[in-house]
Image (tube, rainbow, N blue to C red; front, top):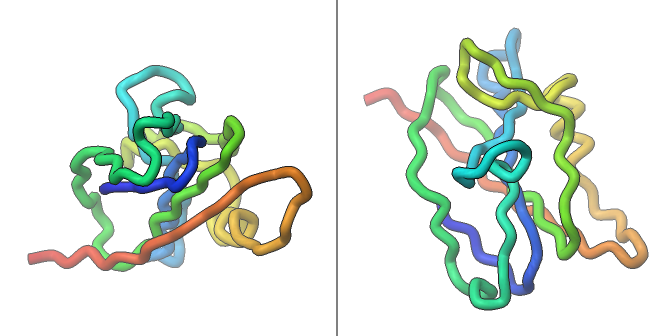
Length: 128
């Protein structure tokens, strides 16, 4: 996974797994080797602006299907949503209803004085 920002700032990634309609979930991706909330947030410095930042390699876990990966970015320090570690999936799941989480992280309402952006990609995991 690679991310590029055109200004200094911060970003984190959120996955929305809605494949299993009976057990949908939203989760944070670990993108740093630090501890605490720092493992989810990447700070883009002046020397990294307009350059691809390689976050590393990831593997796709079950279930197989299509899900959405969302990049949340800001010029100011970000506050993460509430999350917990799920031993079964080994993911840091965001608390609450995944469908509402997806809705609540979307929108194009301009906030005065707040520079905030988001992008997303949908991908399909195939079982070979």
